[in-house]
Structures are given as structure tokens and as C-alpha cells.
Image (cartoon, rainbow, N blue to C red; front, side):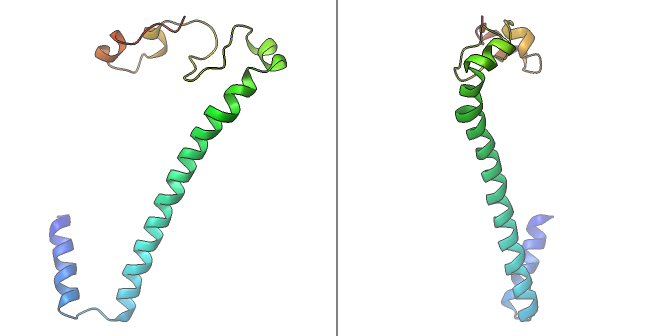
Length: 105
């Protein structure tokens, strides 16, 4: 279906059936799509940066660590509070991957 639509758009464009308004509309829509993708990846990598660089060291500070859980280690990837086995912390992962994951204790 998409190939047919793209083919029709290309044929109409090469035949000169589109005016300047339609051409501008195509260009603006592609520009907005690219902008939205850039913003999506900026948000994703910003959240990853916050998690790895800012929040994990903050959780290992003296006051926070004493209040939440004293055995927390500021290492990435974190296993979360307390000691859990790999099978209990990764229930959504298929069994093949779960068997190869070491325990976080």
C-alpha cells in the first residue's frame, strides 16, 4: 500500500501536477517529522543521562542512602533496592535470557 502511494506521489510530482502550495506542504510536513524525531531522541537520551549521571550518584549520598537503603551501591546498571534474584526482577524477560542473567546479590 505504501509503495503504491509513494509511487503515485512521485509520478504526480514528476508530471507537474502539484502546485507550489502542495510542494510547500510536503516540505513542511517532512521538516516537522524530522524535528519531532530529533526531539524524541533528545528526550530519550536526556532521561538516560539524568538516570545514569545525576540520579544514581545522588542516591548514594549519605543522607539519601541512610534513609532509603544502606546497602545501595552507586553502580550502573542498578538492580534497585534490596536483594532480588534475576528471575524475580526480570519476570517479563523470556526464559532464555533469564537463565543467562546473573543474580544481583
